[in-house]
Length: 272
Image (cartoon, rainbow, N blue to C red; front, side, top):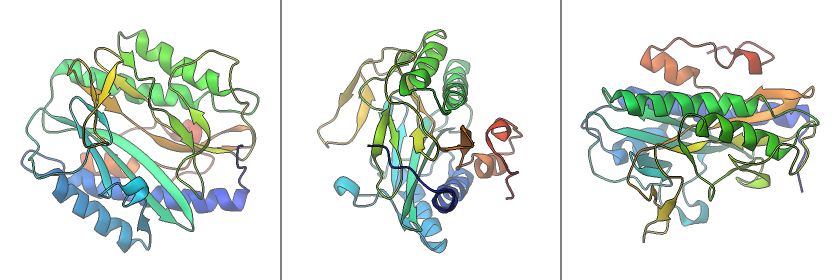
């Protein structure tokens, strides 16, 4: 059952989402060749706690760390370790935090130094597909409308859309109804209603859509060993339209990127 949030609760959820956004911004400053994912994990935990919040992933379903760190062919749920990142890597960094008794859940795939043009395009298309999907999150539409939009956009570029892993409702628990697949058929699935909050997160592979899970019980990789990209926003329905609660602005500030991609999905201007 979809848990509807009041406007006041949505504003509390925005605060939780922005804890994660600010944390990813701090992590962005440190993503470079030679850094280990465990070092990045430590930065994230300290940043979350400094904001009066609690890491949302640490201990969740017995996950051992603050961040899910998934480089290159890893899709999601990679466990931080002592292996240094190298020039040309990409890495999905997924972060969660609890503030005001609500979860924020937010992800971005970073380039480590310079990456090849083919991988750069994968990241660009995956991020664009996130906004293509968000555009469909409005009262009267259905889950399948978001999934169809993301799937078509990515498959039209020749990429594989992961089926086994999906976005989800978000609130006082990390995973609420409805599940939000990145594939689907228009007009199918649960209908969107005012006050719902979801995490939309395309997970898109350069090659096959097929994946495999490793023996650690967490790490997911592409079956063909080709790279995978992952981007995620927390989005509410306010006044019938999508309202992004998280932001990539802190990441962009750290990386020197100028973008207005979120402006169409925010009623009030974001103040950094």
